[in-house]
Each structure stands twice: as C-alpha cells, then as structure tokens.
Length: 87
Image (cartoon, rainbow, N blue to C red):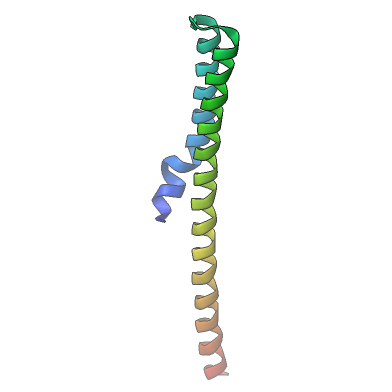
C-alpha cells in the first residue's frame, strides 16, 4: 500500500464516513416510508456494510505498518553492518 493512501484521504476518511452513517440513519428514520421492522433491517444492513469498510481499511493499515517495519529492520541491519565494518 502506498504512503499517500494512508496519509492522504485514508486517515481523515473515517470521521467523515461515520458522520455520513449517522446522517443516513437519521434521514432513514425521519423520512422512511417503511414500517419499523423494515427500517431497522435496512439500518442494520447499512451498519454492517460500514463495518466491512472499516475492517478493510484496518487490514490495509496493518499491511502498511508491517511493510514499513520490514523496511526499517532491513535498513537497521545495513547500518549495523556499516558500523561494524568501520569499527
């Protein structure tokens, strides 16, 4: 995953997403021409969709952090080798 994806819109998208879910739920409750049980089912499905989105972003972030850790470890090993050759 590229750094720009995580630091660009990815890090600020979650609050906007959650705000959108809240607004969507509010409008659904206010303007829904459906019965209570049908409306609750619709809201439940939308929340589950949002849960999937959040889990996908978390998986991407985990992958990014792991890749950066590998790069950092490799770089530290290179630096340690250079230092040991000089010393």
